[in-house]
Length: 238
Image (tube, rainbow, N blue to C red):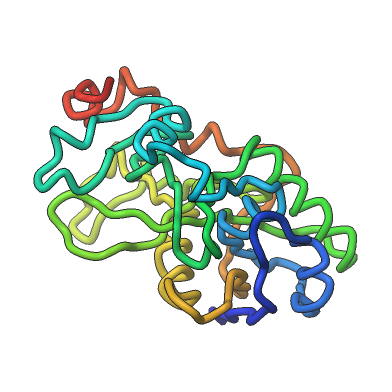
């Protein structure tokens, strides 16, 4: 595989033109590519930016944006409000202050539809059929320091490599194993895109043998909370 970070101009809150940036900087998209785009630049394109000076309580803003939350008072050190949003466990409902020019940048709206819009635009512009899009963010996971990339939406390819029915090295049949492709690609992609002043909010992953499709496959990746093995933990959210 090739991993190709795309350096762009700075996108300025409270609103800027992401698709103009695609035209300026994303000039080489090929058949079978998967393009990773940070959720922050999509949010800026949508104008999902709130001046920090105008917000009386960040925690109240977080709770308004979250689907469910655990209050800061229950978190060691009162460090963060833990939230669930769009099938994702993430701190602060994804609200970000870094590279935000005095704003809180909220998560994008209509995330899956917006991801498809990017897919449609780039596929048409570059005259290709098979294309994947992954919308990324950074989050933390329990019992580990540091942030890592995660996909919050994808479009254009099948998200699961199903190994059920195959066998391991010793002939044991695999019964539940499926590989999560969007999050695996997002984890390494976001590592290369960076978290600071790199100005690389787009990355092209080239050469992964994805199964491409023109249908939405996001729901294939999502586990019903009632059937999730982490349900005992998820039940702690209000």
